[in-house]
Length: 235
Ligand code: ADP
Ligand code: MG
Image (cartoon, rainbow, N blue to C red; front, side, top):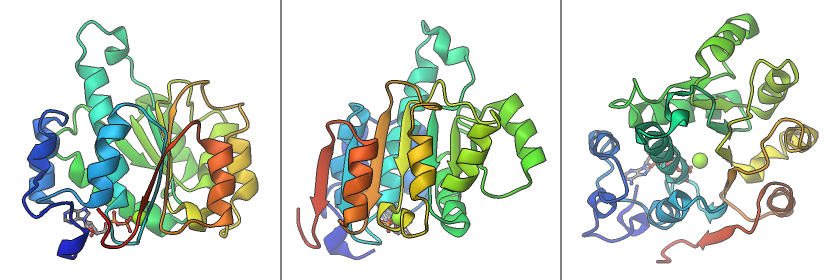
């Protein structure tokens, strides 16, 4: 992580202390994330306002935490609102789609580090690993708050009604520039066909480059998005 990719030499994650739960800030400090990167600084406040986000920022710029942090915070917010009956209702609130099992595993590891002080409040499962029968039990009984999946596995679980997204609040397509080149076009189309997703939810499209594929996904998955195009060295 080079200094130029960080937002401001003086800024720390405490600039978000009014927006972020102390447990997330503590985990970020443990992870050695002293300051938000540019994409994190721009995306986190907008994402907390539930805007759809298209972020293009180079590889290594911290796009994972740019969506994981607001997703975690929104789940904590929902669960801490004492008046809300939803807080007690266990359901999958976020789906993170990643093109390969290896990348899905990496994102899950980062996400679990971020959630280490909120393990009781937020559960997270990578469904791209493990057997389907084991997953079936976990998904149907525990209804993890966050599900990480390749598109293929996500669609199979949706079709078998093992994964239910009726209460989905956030959907991420990470590595958006790669996801279609891995042949996931039809799968993504089916996931977004309207059969499985609620009417209203927030979408994130994260990409290192702006390709025709990303434009296509933008049309398919985002509604009136905020577009963050972060060039190297830009602030
Ligand atoms: P991208 O998805 O944009 O390629 P990642 O989210 O994988 O980037 O992050 C790249 C690396 O930078 C990872 O090792 C991650 O742990 C680290 N990183 C992310 N955000 C920060 C931060 N705010 N401070 C320090 N390191 C960070
Ligand atoms: Mg990434």
